[in-house]
Image (cartoon, rainbow, N blue to C red; front, side, top):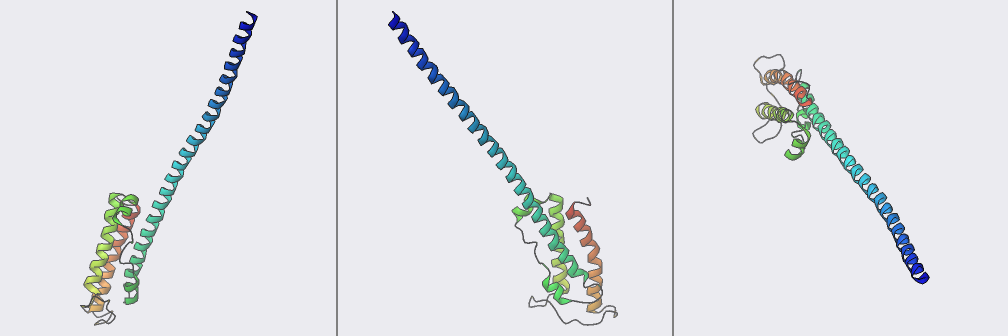
Amino acid sequence: MLLLISAILLVNLFILIMLIRLCHSIKTQQKFLKQQIYLLENSQVLQLQKNDQLIDERRSYVFLQALQLRDAIAKQVSNLHPRAIEDAPFSHGLTAKELSESFSPMQLEAIASIWDLFHQYVDTYWRTEQGKIKTVFKGAVDLKGSEVHTILNASNQLIPKIDHLLKQMKGVEH
């Protein structure tokens, strides 16, 4: 009987040791899972931060392109500078998907309008029949009705429109 009690105690002791090890293993796995969850949450936060940073970079890039375009037109207000038109960005440089991920619908409309107006302006006043940018013009700055005077007037009229669209693009004006 003593032998049976000893055997039962030994089995119970063995079970107790196994339960302690199992409990320790569960605690270790629980710590590991908490670390994994923490890392996953942080990676998601980091990914969101990277996405926000990319969106900010895209917005800044497109806005700078639009400012360069505006500057090229503004240089035509007092005298003609064909090189400024040649060097102006004829595109914002982003795909439709990149734009839609980075701008609101109202801002997208402003961006499209800025480049549409610029292309109309260039096609109307600056393109040759061969598709090149003109470098020689008829008339003079002070000669009303001349080609030079017409381009200066068109430039003067276009700048406020571009300025309004730039404000809309930045979300300043609704």
